[in-house]
Length: 147
Ligand SMILES: [Zn+2]
Image 1 (cartoon, protein in one colour):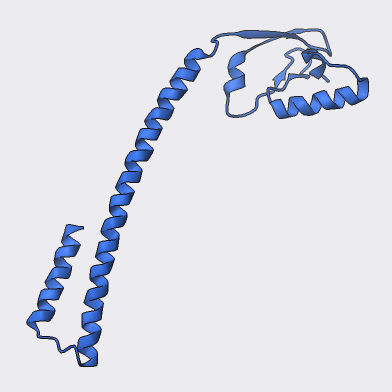
Image 2 (tube, protein in one colour):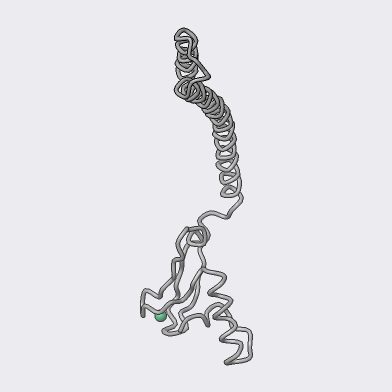
């Protein structure tokens, strides 16, 4: 950035050395162009400073986020296993609570009959519960999610 400012200063010096006549069209044009270049360099310098501040801010937010994630994961129960009974074949299906924290929704299927026993997605759970409520008019247990 300093190099750019130096070059613009050099241009200004050149223009002065040439004794540019600002009353001619060409002289006026060159003086204006040098002025615009100076303004551009100022603006770019300010933008760069703002960009640097933003980068520092994002970096510190990223650090905070990593610490927050570590804290949250430390508070979560580890190696917890949930056991469900498959409503289709009666097989006991065990799965790790880790699946609740995966980015993608992972359905739990029965290893015996391949039926879906559990969908760890609250929205889907809501929908299924509502459907069941309408059909049966009762509060379904978690095992009734098996088709
Ligand atoms: Zn089953």
